[in-house]
Image (tube, rainbow, N blue to C red; front, side, top):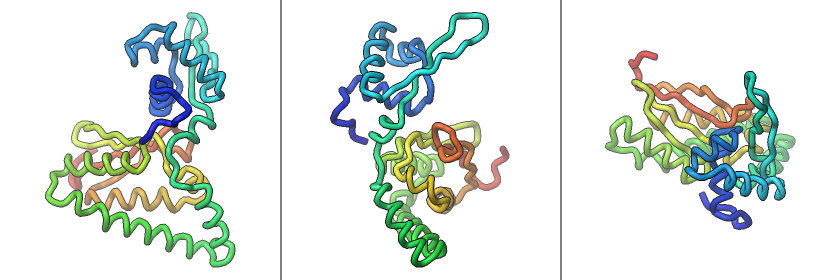
Length: 213
């Protein structure tokens, strides 16, 4: 994923961290980057002035209120999108003229093409290696993806949606994404976080068949 040209590298890292983690405090960001609160506040002030970050004050227990920082919609739009605004317009016209069945067929065929392209990259790999490679593929395609092991299962997390506007309008891309993960891994896949539902990321738990939760 390439950094937005209008934001310097340090501030882009702050935006990326907020994108991945949701709301964070100055202390949380300072600890993450290993730098002072003064430095973090300086960069946050610049990002707020640019309309890329906003803050919400929250009281925690008996202590002083803290400011929780998050990226704005304008900042979110700086992360990769697969020309999805144009795609929404085209799909809407097709839906009007040919119906939802045509839209579903388009997404089904798209998922099948992706499977054909990416399956060779997984050939001969162990199950953990497949999960890691799938996360790498997703990251290459703008999903800001990461993976980790969780006991006998694996979790793939997508912190960005490259087709966000399409996914807000149509359920098909989310449906076929999970289907594609199932087919590529040959495993049980469960979505446990969903950006469309209001979470800050999409996350999937992936288990080999026969593994217990």
